[in-house]
Length: 307
Image (cartoon, rainbow, N blue to C red; front, side, top):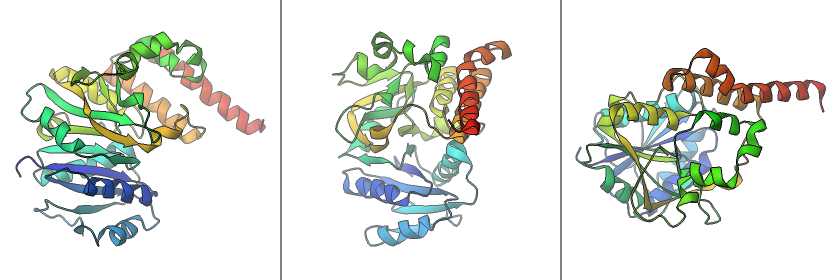
């Protein structure tokens, strides 16, 4: 399948966002792609709703081991909610199996603009040293989602990311950590460390070579792990600011979830990332993740005491 992109969208319960995302892709000027929707055990009729609303405007099929699919939307029913990495990997492996030369991971709370896909693909195609490209992410109000491009975290950063380290997030640090704060008018293709998982376009062969996403995490640190795996191969991640995608979820981001489940996901993913992909000792992993550990314990105690 020559120069074709499989766009993988993970759905969990919020099928209307997924439908809106897909419609924005269909309305764009993008070419040579097909869409794979993986439903992560929503158990709310998501795939049926997606099929009902999209069937009038594009081909919709259910995954049944097809060996040929190159246009429209392919629906995949993942019987277990296996998290971000494993859920996306289901669709990525199908796209790769179907012969896609490029694989895009796209959050369902995003909207395409114009020919973003073609601009991302033009940079990664034929580049021996690039594994992934990402767009400039815009918030719903038109501002920049600075998470679109970040540098590799340094040890002290992991404490900054915790509730207790908020006071260390100075403006000077923000300018140094987020590329688009440091270079707000950036308009050229730029090597970065970490591309946001909201929208990532991969060279399919390279992505397959590093095993797609690491399934040891349920949620959080997936992009940072990809950076470490690509770094060992000598491959780069690249921001393409000419390509723009709207990330509606960035509009309401507040930093830390108040869900104990989400907090534990972040804590466990952080420990795994530090130990398995950054090579820190058990002592250093404990120190660097201590901010998250103390916040989880504070949060748990607060709920028990009902403050």
